Length: 126
Image 1 (cartoon, one colour):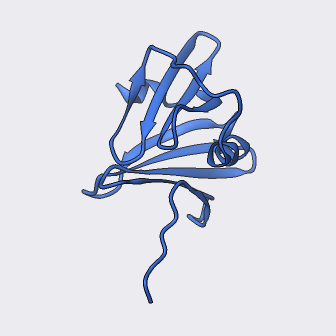
Image 2: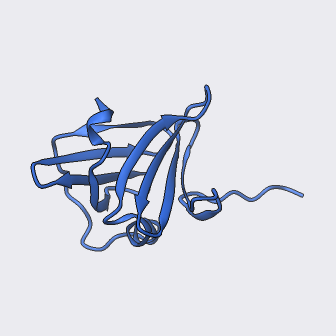
């Protein structure tokens, strides 16, 4: 089902809450909405929810990096509950990594997997 999204261009990202995002993917004859919830789920949906007037700070970073890029791949990383979304553009690839365990996380990286932005930071005790 998600393979139908491959090759579509990301036209916008909406944050429904601090953990839930809707990605609007399209080409002229095909429009789809992909819902991502950190720590819980991801799936296509036909229903657009009410969105805030202004995007949150994390969503602003996602929009800046990913808008107008094509979704080129969706894959599970190993046997973990982690999914990688690969976006391509003229200046290279970006990866959006969705963790589907505990509180989860959403991580945006460049083509060499250097972290650009993450939804939820973590402080390690010394």
